[in-house]
Image (cartoon, rainbow, N blue to C red):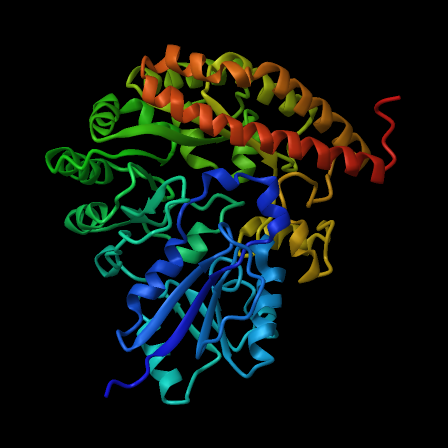
Length: 472
């Protein structure tokens, strides 16, 4: 008679209030928890519960529970953990919040996994089975060869796209980004054969490569991606996909054309700022290097022209561009906002993603502003719910809070007027000459439009809170 399997519940914790504010229709699968499931021995029964699809409302009986959460979802994750700990069930937490906030997390869960799980999860499971679960595992970092090949064949159909990795990590150290600390300061390629095997398990047409930077930064990276793209073409996988990249890829038309043949239709590019001082403050080296501006040359028109040419180059290859920016660094001024809106007006990007800078735990930016006493929220963990890109988190250095909100509200109004949401399909069709890309961006723009509208509602509330009298 077969022994009863042990049961593991894996929960991707999502604050439902946050979910309403962002893009619920653009969700992808929780790769981190899928990796954990794949690493778990066969004598365990594993269930993944993703709150981006369904709200966690009831206790699910199990022997062990694992929870993953971003910073804004951390408080909610702790609430879920408490329901299990009350019943004597061991709780484990990992992810980009628990790793840097180890001491805090251990007040609410029994065990924290720091970094990547590939090399330590099986050890953790053995320790649990032997009654010797430790409170901390890691930090641990794997190589590309040690990354797990996932099976996506049974994924829920409600996901907009199926997420997959071809690489992990980033060698840059932008001040606001957690990637280097969480994944190590290396750019790790997966074996091409592993990526192809995983792609074959995906039934859905739309795929999203979640790599921090799909194409990479060096000639060696580019050559590796050429091989992968050619393999995707040769294997006739017939997928449409999007990913993230630095703007430097615009200099490699050969790669862009090959990527288009392999199914690439959307690139998410972080422009972040059009103020050279701010780019330096962020340590945004990829953009600074691409622009090739002199140290003292903060020439917005020169910057805009370089970006316009780059965006047009990408679009001519049949690939749409999502441009991302943020505002609220110390060297930002009111002119920075005008530059952002002018960029979106004149650059012809196909969609935009805008927000206020958020200092996430585990980033140099968080450590700096915390030390300076400039975090506007400090009642953690309750205040983690506030770390959203639609409000000020860092007290401004050179402008009052009142003035910040007043001008940011006007900025959002300008963005909404500039961006022809209802004509997004036709604009993208004109830029890329590709109807599939245009249809995809129509869906994207609906999500981004709702984001900006929700963003504006929050800013209006904040203006009232800080007694701003902008309107009658």
